Length: 480
Image: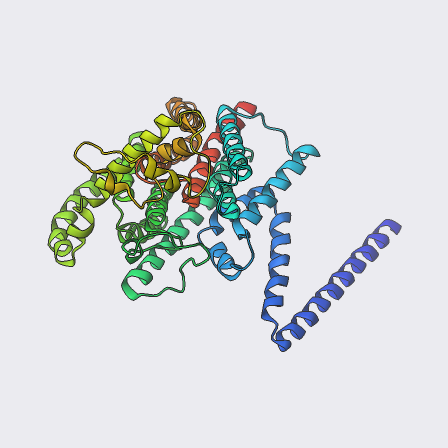
């Protein structure tokens, strides 16, 4: 009886304390609103929201990080442009790493041994960091902050996403919610592309990064990114996520919703007007269909409709100028051939260490290594700051050993996913996650041959986070 009385007293006290705290918060909020200090109010609720998210768990925080980068974080970054080096995605990434490290040290999170992929990542990031420090020490870095930003956002965040995802224990429901969240992101990006290109609405644009692209690139849809290339690659991958949601939905309403959201995402891909992402989606779709029989009828139907649609669209494309100005324009191909020859020549003369890691390193050294590619004159490579190939980009900056580390990481991820898909004792949900991850990785690798995917931060984050989730299933199963 006495224990019950004490329990009720404690409960009443806690309720009274909560009411007092809530009253103080409401009073303070009312005063802030009356005073018109909206920035302070936003900071307060942002801090409260951040604390709630952190307390909700590391896995949810990591999912919010991935979902927030092309949506909410873009506008936070736009509003905080004046703060040097600050972006919301970097801050959340730092918080996740700190929580993960703290949990391992305090033994609240079980330690996970490094796999071969993470060893490649650690070695590659070490090589890049040392190269950047040597460049700084020699005084050859014209902008230390921007060089450091490229290293963090272009390589630490995307490759770190793999390690973060692989260290979580993902349930089927966790992955399902994340996939539908990503598909909604794809739908949002599709609407943004329509608003930009067809209605000239720019309120959704990313403005916190420096524009380094030619005017022609800016006449295409950008989504919430800095370039049409990244926008196209992201929407191509999110379309694969839409296929996953379609396959895993058992209800007709769920499948219809997946098809509608997928279609809007594909509109965004089309409006990017970028050929490599266009071609990469059918490749990813084919990979997914190869490992998933349920989606093969949709794959064949899509091919037939695509062929018919292209034939019907040719007159429209020709009349609009897209056919001649974008699809059949040989200029970008000549540009890449000359850049690849120049980059290969640069690697040949600097095979071990490259020319040094930096945002402008390739542009600074390319004039000394200009090379023709057969009948394609080297002048096509003049004035371009990147080689439009991630393997050559890494090779020119860091040398052949770094390229081998990057290739080994991609090989390990591909090999492990395929090995899991070939095993017949896994449940179908996990196999579908692996097939989806493999298709998304295929899109990433294909685009790496034509685009420098490192500076396109979110493409790498999305790719390696989903690959890490797929590989985490294998780790959990072995633990069982």
